[in-house]
Length: 108
Length: 128
Image (cartoon, rainbow over all chains, first blue to last red; front, top):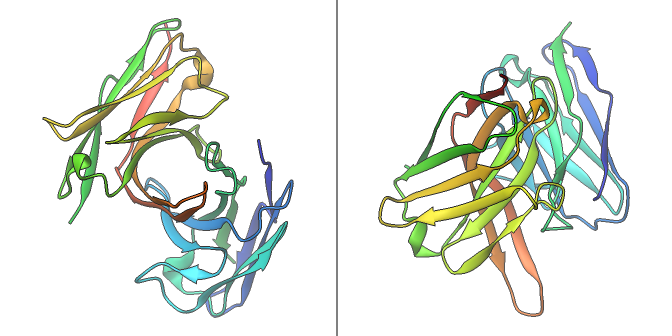
């Protein structure tokens, strides 16, 4: 299976901060990457596909980049509703989707 | 608006079979427009994709669970189901069903938008 590694595992930030989360794939995955947001007690919500394309309704303060093995999710100006855990997920191997370990964004 | 709802026992004994059902409303699973997936998440850990099914294809299972998993459709009830056999404590967690937006193209190509609609999840504990 394709291992996905996220860093940091957690971070503390303030409202208005710029936040960047990194996801690394264990092998080349082109741009076959999704990002999800999960709030406590809720199911994950898909934010992005193809590494950088926002799902409908996702605020433009979220952006994604990367290709190959290294990817980033950036929140340009953190809002109170953005405090959550974020997961990357590869779909390069469509027969065995795998998620990263998650990055918890907490309030400083 | 599409909604998914998981149902099934919250407690399963070790070595027994876990059985869950996902009821879909607002969309027809027999239309063939989407795939339907199961995902689980142990407490404090990342989600793990279990497998998917489509109205016109055989299911695809995570190789790590393939020997124990069966996913099936009941189009008359607009439901799909998960069976996981020989469970152990490691199978404890929240189980989600989800709609998967995947479009297969010729020559093994595909377009993947993600798991775009999820159920609220159901907690399953494996314990005697």
